[in-house]
Image (cartoon, rainbow, N blue to C red; front, side, top):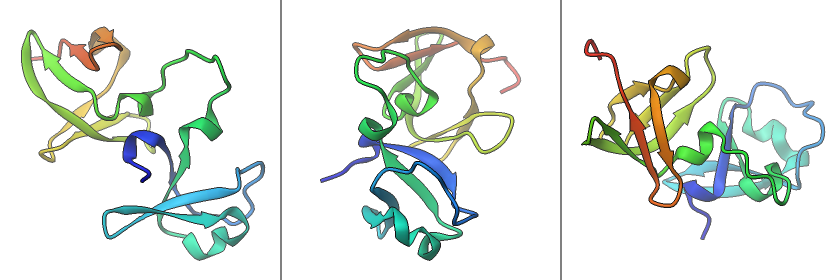
Amino acid sequence: MITAQDLISIGVIRRTHYKDLPDFVFVRRDGLFVPFRSENISELIGEEGFLLRTDMQEEGDGTLTWQDLVGYTVEDEDQTIGVIAHIDESTINTLATLEDGRMIPLHEDFIIDIDEEAHILHLQLPFEL
């Protein structure tokens, strides 16, 4: 079964003339990720599209993307804040939505450390947040 950790969001599908898409684009339906052939992308306008991570990353590419942080536990000064359920990169400010629905900004200035082995994102968030 395909899970959110297997996919990368490409945002809301707005146009039908995407180039160089892999064979399948996924959308969330009733909590499940359903594949659609890329040539049928016009049926998906207005829905959030997802691609398999393996289709997006070159083999051996160790670069961590924002979307790779889905499923990571967020800690602020050794206090667990929650687990990232979704990353929104559709605006200038990248936002992480936690499993409980709270949203936090993801900015390089806030990141202290990323423990890839333990899947923990260590942040130092401004007091106002």
